Length: 340
Figure 1: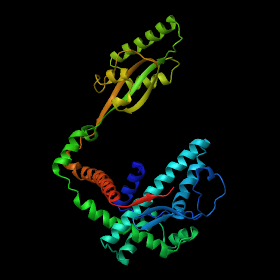
Figure 2 (figure 1 turned 135 degrees about the vertical axis):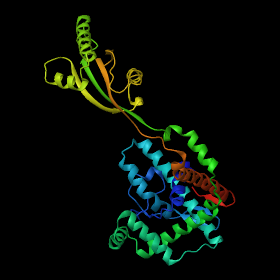
Figure 3 (figure 1 turned 180 degrees about the horizontal axis):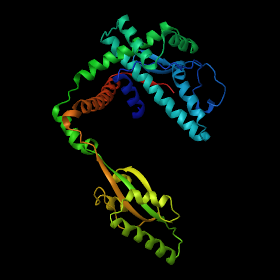
Figure 4 (figure 1 turned 90 degrees about the vertical axis):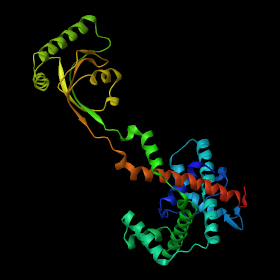
């Protein structure tokens, strides 16, 4: 099965997201890739046999239709569109097979759900989407679905989630050592961040400037540097230049992390202290002087403060991996026949 499609299904189930697409299209799409550009028609036959149950072509087309619509809207070249439609259709079929295998296991394990649990799941959906009960019903009606049919869909999804809780989640154990190992291997993610508030003064020099023009620009910048060395405030000198006709200009560049700067500026800035300025730099931009007005540092995030977040990350990753393994095992012991 396409791993991306499988991961999508796994994340949906493992995250307890009981969401039904209310954009379901009920007009079937013909199976042949060569016929996708033709008018829709309702066709039905067996698309796949999973143990003692079947997925019909109508079921497949109904699930595939919204994806086909979106792909066509992208206006791919004909051959790429054909290939994309074919691949996505195969992915959707595999998702339907996995869902049916899960439903069959639900029956074998005699997993049940109460009406109260269905009500709670629907309320969570309404709350997350900020739907009123009337808005939800109207949305379902516009797609030709009744509330009773929707409740049945939610029931199936919640029972699949219970199955995953039993077969996958209950068997996952994350230790303190696992959390520490993740923290240590992602130090850069939790390290404190340093930002430099930079100003500059500059003269733009183009690549085709003559030697005399470049020398003149360099001398002007050296004169500015001399004034700065006489304890002249960098900020006040920038303000003065703004109100003059001088070719030298200045600006407040704002906050930067070192990795956001060019290699040349990075090497210069990390050697400058707060309130200090560089020599005259010959850069691709022209001649300039860099000034570090201040340095802002955020504190590193200690392991103790990040344990819960890391545990959630590891848990989600393990659920995903274990769910794939469980699905593969379930497929291996099942009779699956795809009918082309």
